[in-house]
Image 1 (cartoon, rainbow, N blue to C red):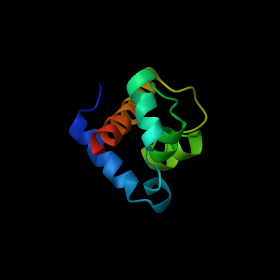
Image 2 (cartoon, rainbow, N blue to C red):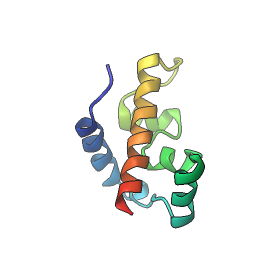
Image 3 (cartoon, helix red, strand yellow):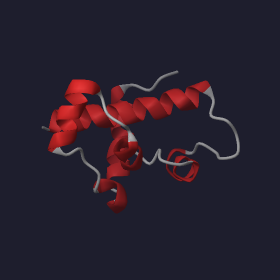
Length: 91
């Protein structure tokens, strides 16, 4: 089951209140790259606390020590894509 945009937005708002995570935004050159070709997700992973298994566990409750399920992978992709959408809309 995929989460709706309102649920993803609420989670992103909570994550953005963490001082470390709040520092991450797309810069103008990256915005052009997103518009033209897509982008690497490294910045988005850090902004959404999906950068490593420890962050996934602490922030999203996805336990370490197992291969991500299809549902977990979909969630990670959805929250990263929603963050990118929100960043693009800010411009």
